[in-house]
Length: 297
Image 1 (cartoon, rainbow, N blue to C red):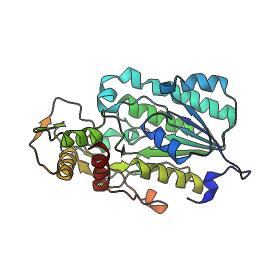
Image 2 (image 1 turned 90 degrees about the vertical axis):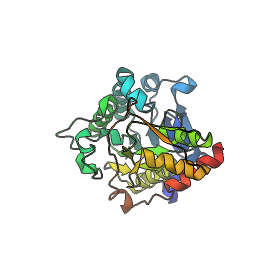
Image 3 (image 1 turned 30 degrees about the horizontal axis):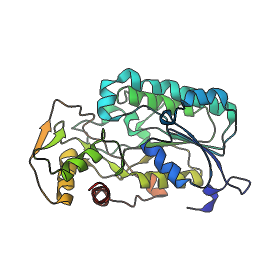
């Protein structure tokens, strides 16, 4: 990257706060920003970010806010009130930002913030940033999507907020509650039948977490604060993902779909027009699967 993102305005190292630092996304940002003055807040190290916001009044050069309750599709559909805690987390976060005035703020929204009416089996159009109109919001994806669209709304009243809408970020070290690592695991175990939740025709836009971090840091350096999709623009069905994982391992089992399991929206893929103005994702899904097989095999 241009070196300006790696130094504060006085030319020294940055003071960086990362909430949700021990989660899947947080770990990638921690690795990227090694060498800076990092403050890491996560429930996994015994720190609730809401308690931190009550006691901390330091002004940070960069704040990356990732603290949220997600846990995969089963959690989103099965624990709506737990996911709703994100409304409290983001509200207290933005109140804290107004008080401490960080120089740069990264807020992770989500592709779940997009209206579900645009993500049906009959609607196979990429989701463009303009499909969310905060002056006339439409129904998002359950309480997780609702919390993210609310977070974006609150971000309007805080200076220097960079908003990102990641699609299906993945990596070999992701929790097994997510489809990508679970499918790699099933392939490595040569499971037959190979279980796929839902009808298997539902599509997602898988983007490697390395590309997510690179795109975010580039946008922050360039001062881009408008909402930006983080995806590849490539729609992959769950059946296709299963076949790709099995091919990488060297076998082809029978695919058994599970319509009784959580499905989510039927079609979710990024319109990458804005992203491609400043960053092009580098890692293909095939390369990401190979990496995961090499690490986990």
